[in-house]
Structures are given as structure tokens and as C-alpha cells.
Image (tube, rainbow, N blue to C red; front, side):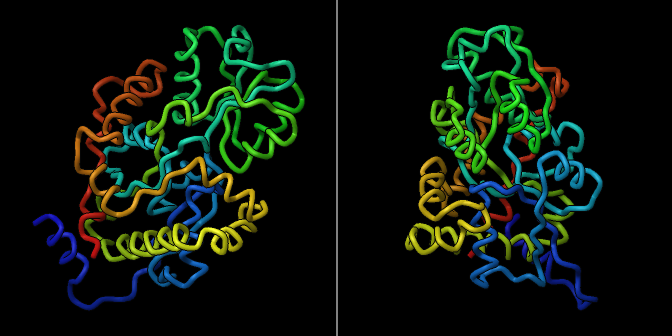
Length: 311
């Protein structure tokens, strides 16, 4: 019934054409199905406009109403939801199983080596989540390292200049830093299934722009199927945007999982799924870090209606 209501909501009487739905995305391999869909002509650009952003700028643009939807880690989405309970997570875009990592600089070979030292993390809760899970894995605590909030665009310089002992980063910068001599200390491969990206929008957008959201989702899943069916040719199309070679993108893709529609829907509907479990774990961590208050109940933002309404 909810799915039918959602679809009917977008088909009212005739009106002036709406501007395209503005979707903000980072340069991150996990979001490439959207850009591939546009490149292949699957994405109706009269309905959906993709907008490139850096992490902190994108979150600010969403808060200020400059974007209608964004791709964010579930942890970051919960952090945003704590400040705006109208937000809804309507799609599972990707699951990181190695694409996000903590990298050590000169002389740092293990997470234990970070005790008492400076670690660069972005202002988002998603960055702090991976660092905390890494520390837990070796019996260390948050107070055992110095957390240095660093914008995503400054991480490489901070590590290269020795201002921090380690950084938390993601592809394609992860591979670039490793090629430059950094050591991988911990990654999402060590906590499989815990770190996912979702499409975050507002409840009003779910109500008023269901056709545009559905257009994005249909194009996304179609491009995702092409990536699975024709990995080499699709990698050649994707690689230039990531500023890597096709073979490098194929390697990056090994650290990612793009759920199909049915798997994504199951994650959105099943409160025992890895998505809900990760959400609850993320919320506990965000409260512990003082980034959100208690009682947010972030998993309440998970909304399956858009995905359930797809053909």
C-alpha cells in the first residue's frame, strides 16, 4: 500500500516541469554506477542531475538545501539525521569491504604503533567509526591516540609532511598513498559488511519527487548490471573519472560490493540485516564520541518505499 501511494503521489495533475533532482556524490568508486548510467544514457538528466562534491562541502550543501539527495556512509547519515529527522535513507548504494582504510606513514607498521600519536580523520562520523573499530581490534581506546580533524582534501599532505602518523581514507586516494609508500594498517575488509553507503534524501522528496528518485535507482541498477556483465569494458569507461587506469579500477572494485535491487530491498526492510545492525553500532559509537545525543534512533530514517516501488 505504501509503495502504491508513493507512486500515485508523483502523478497528480499537470504542472510546470520540475527542475532535476540534485544528487551530490563524492569521487569514490562506490558511486560510479551513477556516473556510468549517465554516460551510457540510462539516466534521464531532465529528472536527475549529478553534482560532484568534496565530503564536508557536500554535507553542508545538503543541510543548506542546495542538494536533494546525497550518497553518504550510514554512519555519516545517522549523524546528519540527529540534526534533521526529516532525512531518509532510501537506497543501499554500496558496501565497502576494503575500499576504506587506515594508512600509516613512515615507520608505522601496525595499529598498535599509533598509541600516543596523531591520526587524521575527516569531520564525518564515518571516518571516526573505522578508526574506533581498528583501535578496538588491538585492545586500544579512543584516548590512546590523538584525533586530528582534517578535511578530506588535506589528508595526503598531512601524511606526506609527517604531521600525522596515519590517515583514514578511501579509494582512489587509498591506492595512490599505498603506491607512494604508505602502509595499510586496517580496512573495511577487516570488518566485512559493517560499512555501507546509502542514498540520503528528505521525507518531503520521497513524497513529492518519487519519479525522479525512481529514475535514479533504475538507472543505477542497470549500470550496476553492466559492470557485472562487462567488467573490462565498463572499467575502461569509468577509470578516467577516477583518474586511474582500467586495471587499477578493477582492483579497487574488489573492495566493494554493489547490492542488487532485491538484496538492497532486503537490507532496507529486515531489521536484523547488516544495515540495521551497522546503524545501531554506528549510533552507539557516535554517542560515545559525543557527536550525537542519546536517543536518536537513527535506524528510523531507513525507508524502503523507493526501492520497493521499482519495477
